Image 1 (cartoon, rainbow, N blue to C red):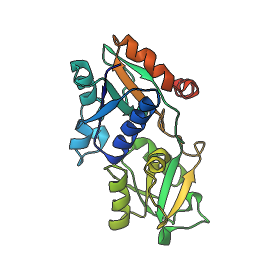
Image 2 (cartoon, one colour):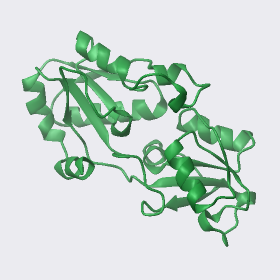
Image 3 (cartoon, rainbow, N blue to C red):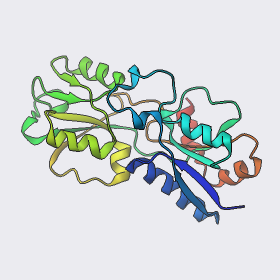
Image 4 (cartoon, one colour):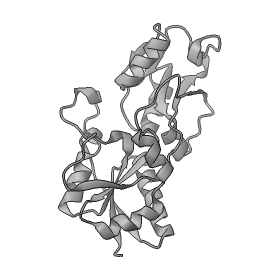
Length: 232
């Protein structure tokens, strides 16, 4: 097998994910290099994702390069993928999933352990996800929800430096980046209380449908239990 080119976004988390796949490939004797590709979701940071036109805000440009032959593999957060894949592309493998739970980071002076989610009354919570917003308000109608965009370290920095009392993140991303959260109160929210995005915590390895040899090779790093879990 030739040296493969892995397409990835350039955020800290995306690079961690791509390097994780690179290491898995090295474990089965396949060399790979990374190519960083900017997506629409990376370029437009002043709008909520539901205000952007089209689909695949974090995936389309990677898929275009995959179809164009400039990369051999695209690594995605599975939850970012549209439900329909472009013609000629398939998800060839899914590695083992990280914890899909949501993580609530709260400034320590905004904690009230007598309240649900340990947030003080009227706390300002940062998230740009309509799913998270709706579920938070269903649990705590008194909360104020404000938009929050950016990669994981950027959002944590905004909690530290701006007017938010708390922010809601996917636990998987924080776990992968091994971020020190000791300055915050950390509330792990059970998936029965806040339902995560479909396939949250899972990665997707996308290739060209015609690359049969590569597909067969990637089955060595495919995690069948995760694939079954996220297909439900």
